[in-house]
Amino acid sequence: MEPWDGNGEEDDEAEQEEPESIYPVNINTAGDETLQEITGVGPAIAENIIDYRETNGSFQSIEEIMNVNGIAEGRFADMNEEITI
Image (cartoon, rainbow, N blue to C red; front, side, top):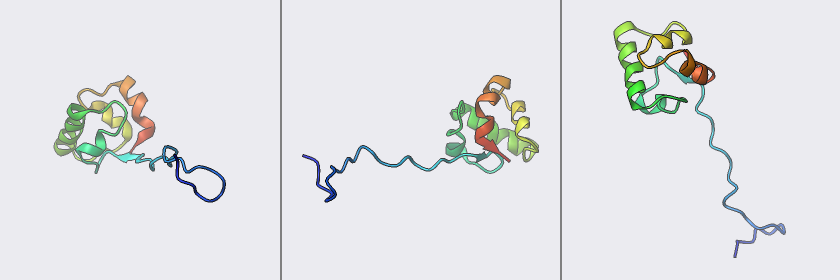
């Protein structure tokens, strides 16, 4: 039986608020785990992003992420609204 909340409705724990969005992710400062929250980015791509930053410095535009090994136009199209610099 569900707990009574006193207003005539059952308290449904399954209906919880959505977690706050982590987007946009700053690709110049995000760590490995945060980068993996971006659509299409797994552990290998996250490492490639970090390696690219360490070698080339900060991204000057979000489009520059397409220079990272494993990120082409299609993947960029899936993630471009989730990233910032």
